[in-house]
Image 1 (cartoon, rainbow, N blue to C red):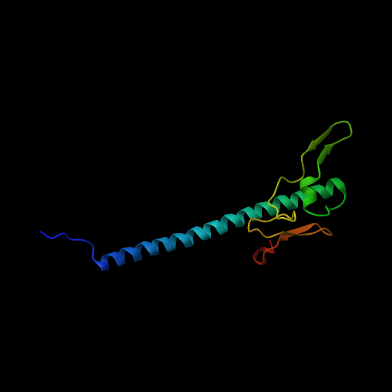
Image 2: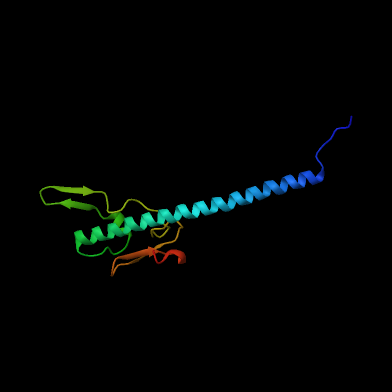
Length: 127
């Protein structure tokens, strides 16, 4: 009774099938990460734009830079009863120079003249 093992052809077929499945999973996983970052970008842009408008309503001017939204205390109420919150925006990803980064790690581009903000990447500038 001879021992039967896998032939070279069977091993090659198995490796090809496994490699194909891994490749398909990698494509799916990469697409899922991109979609989740796009959703996070939309949410962050909405929060930043609302914070800029809130800053403008309370101070009569747009912030000088986006970093001012994270360090400037938010004060609501009259002189007798003030509520002081931490800031207009919570903490964000920042680079070494202190510029805020989007989920794709591009800098947000801010125009202090009209208060507009958009991501720095080429694909999402019209958002």
